[in-house]
Image (cartoon, rainbow, N blue to C red; front, side, top):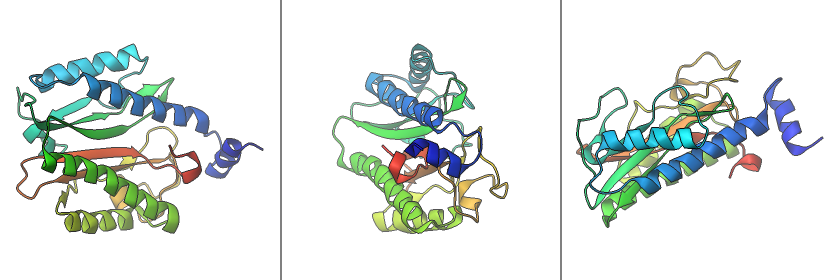
Length: 227
């Protein structure tokens, strides 16, 4: 039995692991392509329109929600807060790309933060969001902690890094193949160990004055499939 087949069998029936991983790969690729086209002087509304076009060009469907691209002060806003309109990316600024497309009917979901120009604080925030994601993911891989424990750990570590963790961005189930995990609506509320390929972990850091933030999100995947 192949490695992927063995993992699929362990995960449960009718879980096409290779197709789910391909949707995730396409999502990460799209984030990079969108970010590469973001330029200072662009408005958020223009960036969102561009992002939608990139997804279409790549053969990705909109998925569970529209693409989000947030600039500057809008990067600190909570998910339920509408962004301030007509925000323009400055010469030295921070932004994030957040998408949840589908590829051949399989869901992807991911986000990453980027910096234009030179700003050490922005660069640190973007770097720390990704670093904290990887650290918490490592705790999940090694210790098989519950979703609630993972986010409690993330909150403690964020404060040690000098940031605040946004509790509103608390992870969610990946649409399509999640089953048997207590019906929790967020990863942070999950009292059991999240299963590989079922959940999206979100790390949204902000400075304590709520002037800017950085966002990183990806599907939780076991080490032997993670790349």
